[in-house]
Amino acid sequence: MWLLVLAYLGGVLTIVSPCILPVLPFVFARTGQPFVKSGLPLLAGMALTFALVATLAAVGGGWVVQLNQYGRWLALVFVALFGLTLLLPQLAERLTRPLVAAGSRLSEAAGADARPRPGASFLIGVATGLLWAPCAGPILGLLLTGAALQGASIATTLLLLAYAAGAATSLAVALLLGGKVFAAMKRSIGAGEWLRRGLGAAMLAGVAAIALGLDTGILARVSTASTGGIEQALVKQLAGKSPQNSGAMMAQNPSSASATQVADKTPGALPVEGNLPPLDGAVQWLNSPPLDAQALKGKVVLVDFWTYSCINCLRSLPYVKAWAEKYRDQGLVVIGVHAPEFAFERNVDNVTKAMKDLGINYPVAIDNEFKIWRAFNNEYWPAHYFADAQGRIRYHHFGEGEYAESERVIQQLLREAGASKVSDGLINAKAEGVQMAPDNNEVQSPETYVGYQRAENFVPQTSLVPDKVSAYRTPAQLALNDWGLDGQWKVGPERATASAPASRIVYRFHARDLHLVLGPDTDGKPVRFKVLIDGKAPGDDHGMDVAPDGSGTVTDQRLYQLVRQNGGVDDRTFSIEFLDPGASAYAFTFG
Image (cartoon, rainbow, N blue to C red; front, side, top):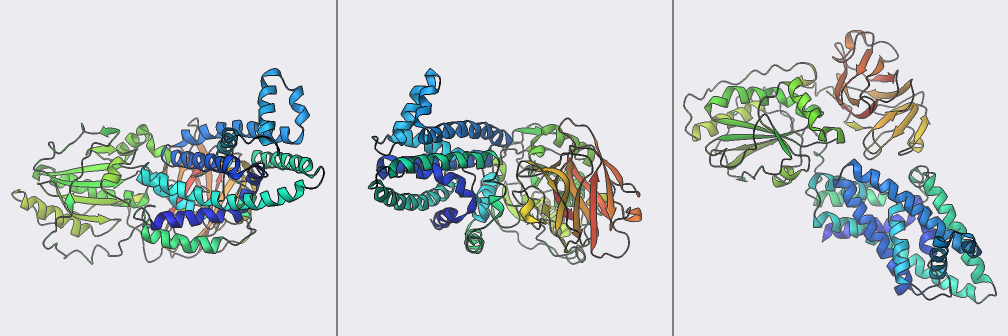
């Protein structure tokens, strides 16, 4: 209930967000008609459609977003027709025969003196819901992120409905107040007709604003009312109450203990944390037929949640692979559960290639629908769950580190299962390249997403234009952890795509290693790039995917190591220039 209240309050704040402005004329077009038969159906259609589209977009992948784009354009045409009939009722007579009736009905439904039609109002509400792209702010972003990871459920839809209902409530108040003004104006001769035409003009202006992207671009970056502080306070409450937002869903490393600190630490009595959930939610299995409780009977099981572009997952993989090899004949079964973070990680061919490159030969379940993730109530990349031979989870570890303790847990569970000659020694995993452990004493730069959905520290913030090709220029000076774009870019929810040669990304960072998740052009054509550090070729500080002169090529959708400093670590300015168009950048990580 507390989550629903906070989501509702977040929706209420939408009325004072600038990006709601293009939608307001569609709502006020019902001014002057009975609220129950006109305004209420419109707001209901708007809220229901918004909640449905938001739910599908959060859990359905890119195809839903693309489909909704077509729906938005159809809705724009529909609402534009409605606005024209308000502004110029005589225009309906000049339209083609099939549209005459539709235009007349719309005109009658919108008329101040006409009999209210709840069905027409609801239809306008549905169109408005498709067009509604609110500034969203932290609360809606948190709800959508949780929905993407936790999956479609009644709870998810209820939270989105609560958010939409909050927005509808504030719009309803504005509509009721507007109705009183309209009633007063109607007493003046001709005022009603002029108001009707004014609303039609306002609707057409709203259509133009949405078509030009002002609702998600300029208006989304301007604040006429300071809602940010209020929303952030609500987010802290919402995050504190919500099990799906622990701050670790983005592949954070919660462990601060080093390997030497836990080398002599042995597990005591391991509690029973619950039964091992079924693994039947995978869309496909690699390196193995589907594994179930019968196949795992009598085995010690390690379940590793990972995704192949996650730096924290990659750094833990050498240990997981070594355990699988060392203890396979003693009764250990290692199962990787690949739960994608980015859309390209849903492509099984990409995962298959990554597994081959990484040398993973144990079973991997493709959890594209996050069914196994939800069965474990998991929230982390990476996450390791250890189950005994009776199918009971006895231990878990989130993030990197504490590998020695985890291996001792494996040894203890194998002994409990009756395995003979279980080694007391610990593996010495070979970790090279991107899999080398980070220098945590020097990492002062956070994981940073390039797509607008989760972008932070982008400079200048006012120039970010979602989903449209735009020209950017990086400021001459950047503070630590600030970053910017330069050249022609199209910024989407989870990535930014270079639309022309010589487009750059610049980042002021402090860490030994800098990684960037990249992908080539949509047709798979490789994209050349050039890396500079403080304006110079990296030389000995180049990463494994970059030559000393800074040159490199994006060939696959994966994580690229671009910088590994060999000397002292200080604040440095990194830049990557794409010599060909089409490259996509997703997220920076550091080590």
